[in-house]
Length: 405
Image 1: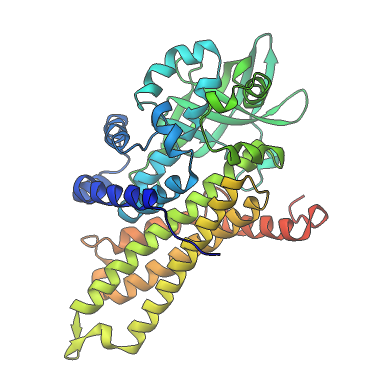
Image 2: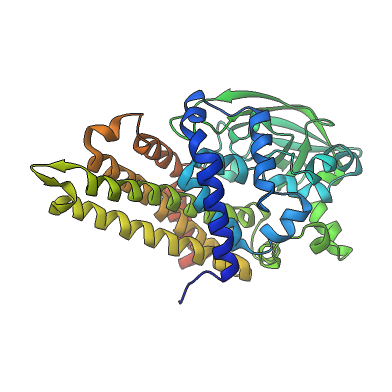
C-alpha cells in the first residue's frame, strides 16, 4: 500500500505543528504539574483550536471529520506535544450528536456547540464492567416520554467538566444496550474526580446517575433512525459517510470504537515520536568515555527499535483510518490491531528513551518521565491490549471462535 499525505494534509499538519510550538509547548510542563485542567482552561484551548478548524462545531466538523485523516494527524501531532490535551479534545466527540437530540437539549446546548464551547464525554466503563461491555449494570427504563437512567460510570475522561455525556446503558425491558445523550442542564448528574499515573492534566472521574431523566428522543438508536428515515443524517451529522456505514456491520459502540482506537494508535505514535526525537538529540549531545553516546552500538540498537515501532505504529494507525473512511468492516480488526500494537509499543519506546537519557530520564525536569507515564496509560482505555487481541482473533476466525462470549 502506497501511503503519502495530500498537500492539504501536509498544510494542516504543518500549521498545527507551528501552533503547538508557539502556543502549547511553552505551557505544558507548568499545566501538567498542576493536575487536571479546569473547565475554563479547556474552553480557552477549544477556542484556540477552533481557529485551526479543529473542533466539533458544525463549521469545523464538516471539514475536520469529513476526512478521518485530519483527525488522525491531530491525534498524533497534539500527543507528540501533550497527550493530556489530546484526550480532552478527542473525548469530547459525543457533542456531535446534539444536533440530533430533543428540542430541549438543542435549545440549551446548540448555542455552546456553535461556538465550539461544549464539552462532552463517553460514559461506558463501570466499576464492575470495564473490558466486559456486555454486563453493564447501568439501566435505562422508559417512563412515558422519558428514559430513567440509574447507575455509576467510572474512569470517564472529561467527566467532571462535561456538559454532555453519551451514556451506555441497558434497556430494562429488552435487555439490549443503547447509548443515551444526557445534557447536564436538563438532566443533572453528579461527578467525582479520579487521579491517575499519566494524562494528569486530563480531568477524569466517576459519574453518578440516580433517577436521571432523559428525553425519549435522546436514545442514540432513536436519533440515528429518525435522521435516516428523513434523509437528514448527513446534513445533521456532517461526518465522513464511511463512519456511518460501519453501523450496518456492527453495534453503535463498536463503530465508535473503530474511530477511537485508530485515534489511540496515532496518539501512541505521537508519544513515541516525541521520545524518539528527544533521544536522538540527546544521543548526539551527551558524551561519555570521551565521545557522544550515539556512537555506542547499544544506544543505536535502542534507537533502531524505537524508530521501527514508531513507524509501524503510524502505518497501522492510518491504515485503520483508511478502512474507517471506506466504511469497511475490516476497520474493527485493523483499529484493534493498531491500538494494541501502538500502545504497547509506545511503552517500550519511552522505556528506551529513559534508558538513553540515564539519570536525567528519571527527572521531572525533562519530559521523558511524562512520556513514559502517559504511554503506560495507553494500554488500558478503550479496551485493554488483551481485549484488542481477542477482537482481532474473533475477526480473523469468525463468530464461532469468540473468546469472550
